[in-house]
Image (cartoon, rainbow, N blue to C red; front, side):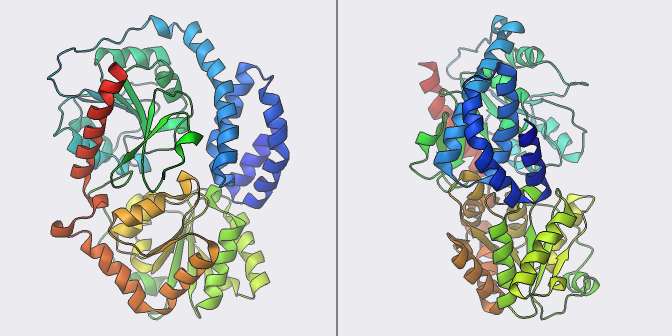
Amino acid sequence: MAALMVMKSHVNSGVSHVAIEMLKTIEPRLLELLDRADMNIGMRLYLNLMFDLPHIRDDVPANSTLVKRLAHAYLRYLDAKALAEDHYAIDFPRDTNPNRPLRIGFISKHFRRHSVGWLSVDVIEELVKLTPHVFLYVTGDMNRDHLTERFDAAAERFVHPEKTLSTADYLKEIAQDKLDVLVDMDSVTVMPHLEILHRHPAPLCLTWLGFDAPYLNPKHYYFGDRYTHPEGVDEHYIEQVVRLPDSFAATKGLPIDTTKDRETIRKSMRIAPNQVAYLCVATGNKFCPEMVSAQVEILKRVPDSLLLYKGRVGDLDAIKQEYQVECTKQGVRINRIHVLPRTATEEEHRLIYQFADVLIDSYPYSGATHVVEALWFDMPVVAKVADQSFGRQAYSLIKAAGSDMGITFDWPSYIDCAVKFGLDANERQKMRSQLERGKRPESLAPLWNPAKFARDFHALCEQLLPLQES
């Protein structure tokens, strides 16, 4: 466990090359340990590795093999806890009227200003137009904000306890509402969800949006799309993969501070009018050596260009050092890379999309909210498509925004595409025009159409529910 904590520290800091080497050493020992680990060790291994692994390695078969072993060990813990806390004594009644609207519950601790909140609030508001029976359960400490008020107003019942409940008490709250469908929006990022799902409190249980599937129950579903989860990946999952027709997310748009204009901001940042400013928005755990090397090469090939790096989480000094080493290696001045300070609010953070020119996305874990933000502000995006779902989110979002540009499948193409955007203003304008067209009412792209997303989501639930009831 000590070695895992050291590896986690390096991942979160942004020193991923150390974590990558550590995983190679630790993994054989982990697989051996899982055969004889007690349930508490199994729980801790699952808790730590499920989140970190996709940040370290883009290898679907290898990651799946390890994750399935971790999940098998963790299930022993879930079984024991369910018995000890008498979860099986809780019944989940159903309304048997076949003609009534669906009763859909969502569990999350992020019904607020958070990536999950921003990318689900519009969908849930549209969903209540299809069924009035939408129930929201807050599953952890959560401060209310203006997004919370919108969730609360949309729900038939908004369960927000003063303090975090036990799993049994959450199950009792859910039982009151006679759900047909339970949607987990946080997966392994909020561990109590896994204890709730383990009891199977609704005929149809699924995970969506906040993370990939938890690998725990073959009767449950994961909602992705054909870009994040292409045909052929199903065998690597425990849950059944269901593909939404367009993308895994939708929103009506994102608020921004409109009191500052691009020219003023760029002048304050000492960015000349003719300079191309690339942007990378990646937390420390989305940082990898190949990405750093590629980004510095892009600067080398686009004269006088800049890279603006912004990360909410990570050791900024360590990240600066990674860039410093690569700049020295490639002969690029380090002063062409600006590490931006963290900001207090999302609106303040989103100002970066007004003064930068091109977003160059992270790998092996691509952006979701950050890519949506860039696309909303018509910023060209360059993404390297990974094998794993976590590194395919930008691919899905770009397509759903109405563009076919900026999507690459290897590092040379990633570099070439970013260089082309940097050298050719017409190429940047071409992608901006595609994105602008996608927001027009007469040609509205799926990413900006949560009403359609809600209809598709609801229709899939209606299709899948009878399969679970039979």
